[in-house]
Length: 277
Image (cartoon, rainbow, N blue to C red; front, side, top):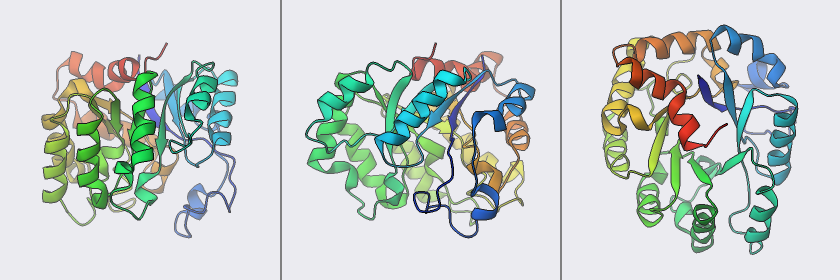
């Protein structure tokens, strides 16, 4: 089974979705729902998806859960929850009634403080996620690299999934600092990595598979095929690539791996990490 471990769905709201800037707005400043991608997924032999939060409210989590009840292609949800909330236990108990909710995420990359992950209340929240069997997706930028390493070292019982290979700046060929971080992060066995979201870090609509290959090869070398998950970051990826182009790129990038390794990346790892049914 092939699983896209990273897709977004939204009914566009200009105020709420202010992260969609003027450059992005003509392409993704509109509604995106499962019907908009279902036929393309079928053509690409993708059997299911994990829907990931794009805005920071529990209404977003509810929206994705409700979509999953209508569209069978959504096999799991990575929602949002306030990890600082003193009533976090009760909120997690509430979401435990929705088995499609597999984990949570916060847009750390948008936080100006480099040590955001290490706040005491946030750490307490992460501990509660691990106690209740949830995963946590890491969406970060370079200023969060050190705190990410500190965080995963402290939260050894929590399963982390690194989104978009930590967004290396491929367009400007920035490699060394990113590679050093990936090498250190991969030493923690509770961390997995999504092969996703990197076409928008390359030159939009002007990239080649060869531009991506050094970054993907190093990620595979560091994490091993058994901890890498295929994802698209659709519809954000359409800023720089069609869905089909990205699938073809991944086919090429992992084509030299064994059949069993490719199956793990295309879906096996996502099914295991997110406990998909």
